[in-house]
Structures are given as C-alpha cells and as structure tokens.
Length: 184
Image 1 (cartoon, one colour):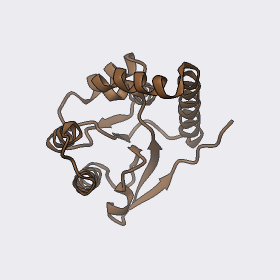
Image 2 (image 1 turned 120 degrees about the vertical axis):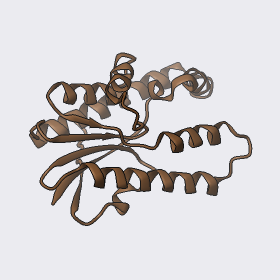
Image 3 (image 1 turned 60 degrees about the vertical axis):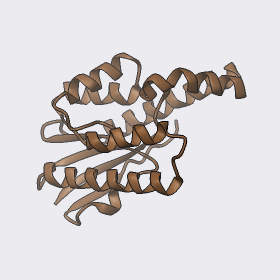
Image 4 (image 1 turned 180 degrees about the vertical axis):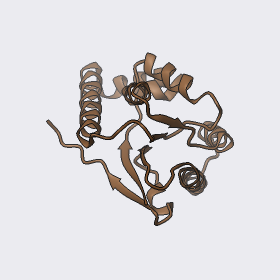
C-alpha cells in the first residue's frame, strides 16, 4: 500500500501568471485595498498552517513524492517551482523547501490538457460543461500519473485545487489521507 496526503489548496495571485494584475485590480476596485491586504494575510496564514501540518506528520523526505496542481510533466519541474517560489508563492516555497530536504518533485499534469484549459479560459464561448469535462480529463491524467510514479510503501503529497476530484480516481492500493489544517 502507498500513502497519499491530499492537501486542498487555493491558488494565489502569483500563480495566476499574466492574469494576476487584472485579478488584483478587479478585486481592489470591488472590495478595496484593505480587503485585499486582509485576504493576502489570511492566505499567508493558511499556508503557514499547511506547512505546520506537514511538519507535524514528521515525514521522511527520502522517498517522499510531491505532486502539484498545474505542474506539467516537462523535465523542468524544479526550475518552474523555484521560479514561482522566488515570485512569492507560498505553495511553491513549501515545495522548494521539501525538495531541498530530499523530497522528489513529480511532474503531475498533461501539458496538452493544461494548454487546452488555458485556451478555454481565454475563450468567450466556453461552456460550464466543457470546463467540467476538461477538469475531469485532467483529474484522470493526474490519478494515472500518481499510480505510475508512487510505489508500494512510499508516501506522496498532492497539492490540489479544491475543484479537483483526483482522490475518487486513484486505485484502492493508494490510501488517501487529507491533511488536517487547524487554524491557530
């Protein structure tokens, strides 16, 4: 049996790439600068709690596999993580710290499906059922990728956005545990 720690995440504006500026501006226009700062502080607290929750598990980094939402299988996974960490993503800073301790980062998603989702998000004609079908395809790919790369007796951590349903698609020999994050 293998063990997979499932960490539901929310994406920060840093992870939105070129859309981040427009998102921040729209948020501030609607709710104000003070709400933006409060939201950023809450986000930071959530990630501090996630990091503390992972530390509390006392996992050995040797043999630990890391899987990340929107991280393509591309051969450049670690530089991508380090770049987003340098830009301020707490999710990616945590991944970089775990890699530095010896954990193995695994490309998690199909580049073709990620590109398809990007194009769909840019399209004015996108339909909700189209987006749901694509999300399910991505989840199937992620589940298959975990099945192929997480070996018997190993532990993995999956950082995955809340809309995903990857756990439902994993084989029974992978025991899924959700990270319990408690507010301070």
